[in-house]
Amino acid sequence: MGTLVVGPAAVHRLPWKPALQILGVAVLITLVLVRYLLVEVVRVRGNTMAPAITDGDMVLVRHTRAPGRGDVVLLELGGQVVLRRVLGIPGDHIATVAGALQLNELPIPTRIAGVFGYREATAKGHREHRQHLVFEELEPGRFVGTLGDHVGAGRPWRLRLPPATVEPGSLYVTCDNRRECPDDERQGLVPAEAVVGVAQSIFWYGDTRLVAPPEGESPPLTAGPVTAPPSAPVRP
Image 1: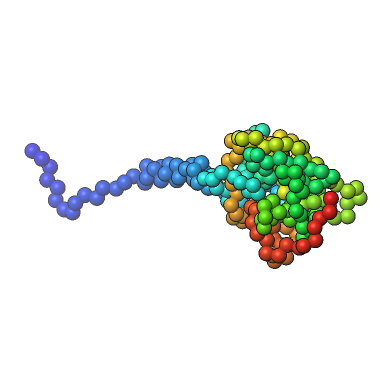
Image 2: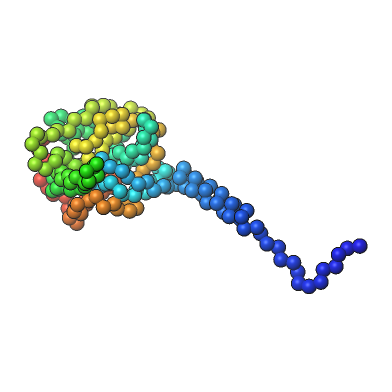
């Protein structure tokens, strides 16, 4: 004999704890897929990629395309994850002569664009740096911003990079802030497989820039046209 139920139909409730667990797992899976298949946002520590990227910036990195000359790449190498600029792709030869950077036996055209200032955190607070802002024309009409020597330096500094020919499966990378770039395995020839992704844009700016560059002289994140680069060439 069955049970007779009189009244409105019973309401079936989904237990809230299992629902939250399912939602949490779905969010986690989505984040993992975004992290390894599409894009991620990385927070930058340090000023080795100034002037385009400085300490505290949040950069959007895309995982879905191979890097080209002038791109900023996220590298996972030597137990560390760093941002570096691609100077050479397979077939290129990189060298420095008397402090001037050469690509395929020709000096890279450079143009002085003033001074760039930024703050660096130290154990005693913040230290201010001002370095010469220089644009490099890696390809015709396509510039990237780099930093040279400190303004008013007592002992002139010259760029010295190890000469190399980029073989298939490799890239030649360095910092944009060459003066402050560490001399280690994350500068020069690196395996292309160490590239995690290519930086696309700055998602959020930190507060270490002292003064924003004038309009038309802002260093592009990746190699791109500059509105009005100064015409005075840098002499070796």
